[in-house]
Amino acid sequence: MNLQPLGDRIVIKPLEAENKTKGGILLPDTAKEKPQEGKVVAVGKGKVLESGSLEPVEVKVGDKVLYGKYSGNEITTKDGEELLIMRQEDILAIIK
Image (cartoon, rainbow, N blue to C red; front, side):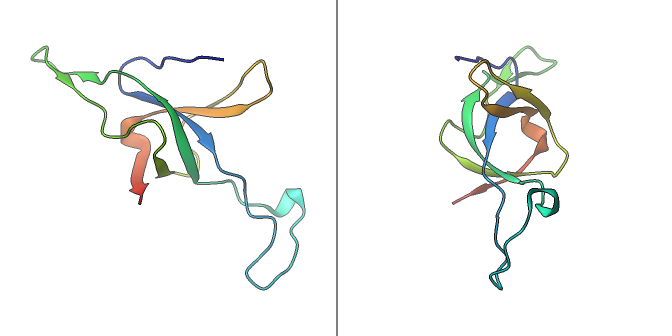
């Protein structure tokens, strides 16, 4: 499914939550933390400023990003893929 987000919105595929702790304990699905990292799969053109100029989006497709725990809107595609759509301001950092 091809998605083209509008404005400064970004489509992110969340990375899988860890299923094992650092100590080696396996976690059940109910105990897993909501992921806060994801991979950018689509970006909008940018935010239109009051002056009419376009402020481009800072992230690009393929970037690994860190975002707030409850940021964005969750969607499920026809293929069953779970994605997040959020504004650029909800992204905290690009992971290098």
